[in-house]
Structures are given as structure tokens and as C-alpha cells.
Image (cartoon, rainbow, N blue to C red; front, side):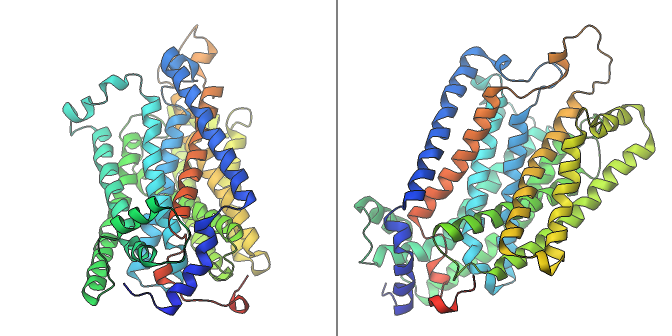
Length: 440
């Protein structure tokens, strides 16, 4: 495939990203690897000693591992819905951020289910899900939905990257190893940028966009039904499916904005990722924040007004500042109102402020998943007498904290390594921009 002048010029601008790592990149890489490796002794320790090294007990049978699982599946929506919808609408400003969104989807969909394995007490029976799984169980629905979702997300990312693999295969100036050239050639699958091939790729991406959007909604709906179909306070609700979907897109958009800011600073992409991208995604964040705030209000108002004893016990526990009240205020008010105020007021609407609000949203959505799970499990239907407090109340142990941080490091590590293999911004979709044209 013959490369045109624009493609060569754009690829040369991304050459430093692919060929070498700066000092700050090396420092961050070492930190990520250290945290990632620290997770393995914790996994081995938990495997040898059992689940008593975690905070999970007879009442709280799910802990922070399930919180992490729901969180990572939620942020995967950044690629599935945002990139899928923007691609179908053929929005021009989507091009520099599509690959980041797609990478978030694939990596988080791989990482999230790993926490389910940490939560299981009998990994030797994992094959029973396939051999003896009952289709009546929402757990099986979740396994099928997430597996299908992962396959669709990988295909979407791959189809959108084939042209860039062909460019990297045919370039002659990048100083990369032979093994990378071999994989570029393998992954390019003889793509030569002919008209027929362009039509096939476009058709494939269109089909995958149409499939991935309802599939993403289905995955988080099924995940919510695991809770919604359980007769427990705070879970048994018809609103849970749309509530989970909105929360997922909300947190996924926040992660995408943070990723944009990091790579913009790390690789000096001010010319390509401009304030326009932050403003548009900030507006999406504002709309989602308003919707999420509405769903939260509706959920707690109806439960409180109904005055059912079991539900009220949970609500008082969540609103109590000595139990979960502070976490609830942060998740339901700070994490919702802050992005709305920052984006709605032009004076506050800067790249850094939108990124700061997005980071708060991401943390708040993790905390909200914690509030959804732990208080409900600490509120049993039958009264419990003479039980040790550690069996009734849940506290995160050092093992769970280490494995939570290791998961975050793994997410960042996979993201970084893939961006060193392929330019973080699609070269085939990018037009050369001079330094004077960049909007910082």
C-alpha cells in the first residue's frame, strides 16, 4: 500500500510515541508494574488461606470485588455507546478520541470479570457454569451477555484499527522491532486500501456499531437484574436497569475525559485533542449527570415514601453520617452537581476543570457501587443476636485494597502498552495539523 504525504507526515508526528518512552513514562511504567506485581502475593495469600483474609462474611458475601466488577463493566460503556453512536452519526470531532474509547471498552470488559474469580470460593468448579448452568439464572444471562459484549468490542476495535496496521506495516522510517513489524503484517490481513476494502471495513464498522449499542445496554441491564430480581431492600426495583445503564455511561464518559487529558499531556496532543472535545464530552457528562441525579432521587424517594420497615432501615443506614451518610453525600451530590455546575457555567468550563470534575465523577461512581452493595447486605431480614460485629459489618482488608489497586494498575498498564503498539489517535483518520493550528 502506497502511503500518501499526509499519512507519512502524521505518522512521523506520532513516531516518538511508538519508538521510545520519555522519563516520566518510564517512571509511571515502573510504578504500574510494581503495583501490578504486588497483587500476585495477595492473590496467592487469599488462595492459600481462604476468603477469611477478606472482609466477606456470612452476611456480606459480596464485597469490594463485586464493586470493582460492576465499576469496570460500567466504564466499558465509554467505547460501546459513545464511539458507536458517534460513528453512526458520522460526527467529525469523534476521530481523535475513538481509539481511546474503544480501548477503554475492551480492557475494562476483560478486567471486570477477573474480580468475579477473586470472589468465588471454589474456582475448581468454574467449569460448572458452562456444564451445568441453568438458563433461568440471571448469573448465566450475565456470563452470556458479557462474553458476547467482549467479542463484539474486540471486533469493533480491530476493524477500526486495520487501516492503521497496514500503514504501520508499509512505513519504512519507524525504528521498531522485527516482532512488531511481524504483528503489523499479520493484523493488517493484506489490507491495501482499495475501494472495495474501504467499503467492507465501513460496512463492518456500521454493523458492529448497530450491534454494540443495544448489546451494551443489554449487558448492564442483565447485570442490574442480578440485583433487581433479588428480594432485598435497595435492590428489588424496576428502575434498576435504566439506573445502572445511565450510571455506566456517566462513569465511562468520565474515564474517557480523564484518559484524553492524560494522553494530551503525555504525548503533547494539544493540536488533535482540543478544547472542543472536552466541551462536547463535558456537555454529555452534564446531561448524564442530570439524568443520574433524577434516577437517584426517584429511587430513594419512592422507597422512603412507601415506609416499608426493611427499606426504611436501609435508608436510615445510608443517610446516617456515622455509617454511610458521608459516602452517600459524596456519590449522590458532589459527584452529580460538580460536573453540572462546571460545564453549565462558561466561566468554569476549562479543560482542567472538566477533567477534574470527570475524575470526581469516576470516584463517586465507584463509591455509589459500594453503597448499592454493602449496606443492603448489612441489613438482614431476620434479626441476628449474639453475632460478632465483624460478621455483620463489612470492612475492606489490605488484601482487597491491594488487589483493587493492582486492578487499576493493570488497566493503566494495558492501556499504555497498547498505545505504544498503535498510535493513540487513528493515523488513517487524521489530517496533518501544524503547530500554529492547534487549539490548546
